[in-house]
Length: 138
View 1 (cartoon, rainbow, N blue to C red):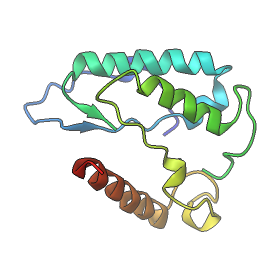
View 2 (view 1 turned 90 degrees about the horizontal axis):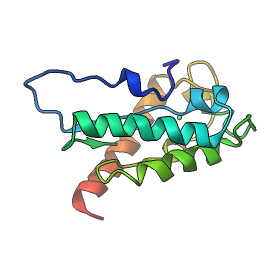
View 3 (view 1 turned 90 degrees about the vertical axis):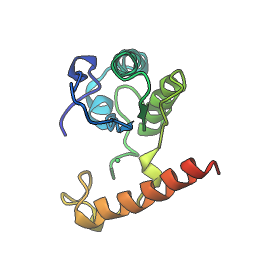
């Protein structure tokens, strides 16, 4: 939390344990702090390149103020820019988490952004269903 897309945070975990999936969950802070969609696309591309270099066989798989306009545009435009770059990487699956839960105050600990226990549970159930459909090829 509180981070941005940043290629420098991607590091080799140096573990003997198999890593089958990497979840990249950024975007909302970029939406507030970055000046343009092209800047966002550049750092997303750099970060996914770095992940692909370190983990070449590993697949890489949000908020109530999402309707507000920011410097770079709407939250939807920001999501589409991340999805656009993600499509350049065959092992990256983009999931738009705006569709995972209802955007109501009762599922956010702070009332608008950070999910509470119920919110995380709803995310988990929705993502599990998406993942099961993905695995079954439907």
